[in-house]
Image 1 (tube, rainbow, N blue to C red):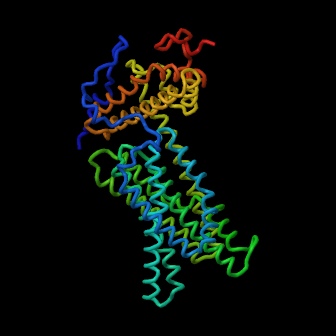
Image 2 (tube, rainbow, N blue to C red; image 1 turned 90 degrees about the vertical axis):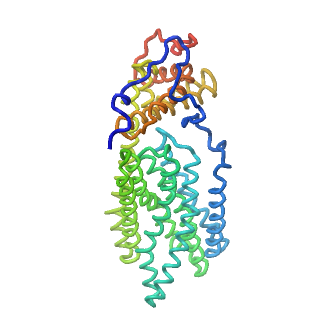
Image 3 (cartoon, rainbow, N blue to C red; image 1 turned 45 degrees about the horizontal axis):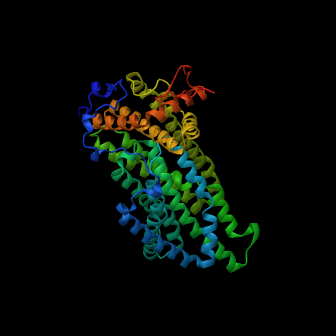
Length: 443
């Protein structure tokens, strides 16, 4: 299929006026159709647009939590809840750090977490229970039904239920799903939510068992369950589902028109997630402690290390994309010469926002943050145009982003130039003046 964006179109950069006035953007005359706007804090988003989704997730939450409390008892539920919440801040902070280069809206992450914790968990507990009962009836062997259900049924059901959240974000939040990092982050939040609810159930049941048999201390079932699920393997579910997220992330990078690739890559990731999940569950169900430790050391830990390396490499690749694509706009006069270097450094970005806050106040720092976000999106858009995946509206979207940069450049450009100099990424000429005549380097 032919490239919808010609090479000349993706290489050319509009040139701004030199008289200080905002250029005209004929390609985006109808601003009601603009896609890129200043990002709002998640608590200010218009949640009324998502009232149906919120209602469904709330209903799922009420049902699943009631089912868990019924199984564990009130006291067991509270103990499980208190212990299960411990790894959640650590995991969500890790995935949010991974997403810092081009952070997506919080509402997407909240949806992913809530879907995993409530909708996916509800589907999993209902489907797994039905399947185990059916297998027990068919084989007249309840013990083997539990083992077979944990090894063959649960991985398929649970990974499919979690993958539904990633699919929905891929289909309906496509502009926020730009590549591999987004896939891993969405998968991580979904799986963290799922593991949270599952851990409440397992830890609550373990506590109830200890209460029934009078066990306590280091030999209790609660301590053993806590050590196995919270200490040794809090990353298990995120690791499984991240494979699905990688599949969707690679599909997002596929050229336009490659529909088969967009279907096969997520499916391959889902199958890998199911396979790794089945191996993990099977090590406990069939082999006992020795098989568990073998799979943990030989499969889970290396897979976790490989995924971590891949995620960090992808994050650095995003920064390299910024430093590689934005110099064209600096050469055309849209950005100061040092800005691409500052924008490709997370440290310099933070320094720029801090400088703006000290010099002009918090509104200026917010403007610099928005400028960094729009510039990052512009770099990724240009990179997609170079690869032939930007779409036929590339020029209009480029002009829209340039408009937003132009509106904030009086504050953001001096701050970023200062940050580049302060972090040693670029030398700034002493005669540099910002648009108000203020020299940011004057002591």
